[in-house]
Image 1: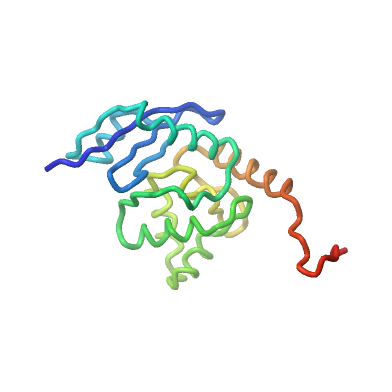
Image 2: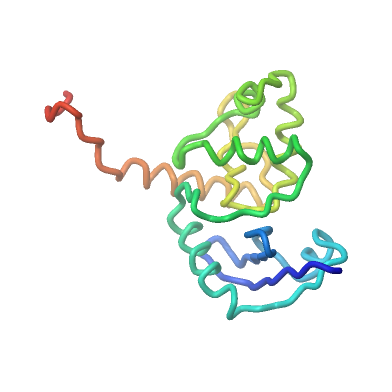
Length: 179
């Protein structure tokens, strides 16, 4: 019995994107996506273009692209190796507006010598922005490759950084202002 994946396309200031939902959750978000990419990523499934069914998902993803933040409320269908899923879950714990290096992610996973493999897992990510591989940078803090373009990676990081700077300072639990 073939599984069904419903998909639709949206537009953002960073370009068009596609999204796909399985019975288990959001399985795909990619900039510049086309049906051919979905066919390649999900062989043997019934692909149904369904903009009506995904209308709220597309709106939510558009908001996430325009106003990046951590969104743990999205139900995801992570499809990858055990190691890739561990990396992707670690990426989701990086707060919006901050970055981590490939080596730091590897160390968090107790595989400190596997920074290159972390990079490969980032490249295999099927959930742009939602699994924030754009928050991973080189050891020197430089921006390295991004599957959907370095220009988009830089724009996402800048948006997150700006949003973080605009957040109100957390209140001191003792009611005094720290100076």
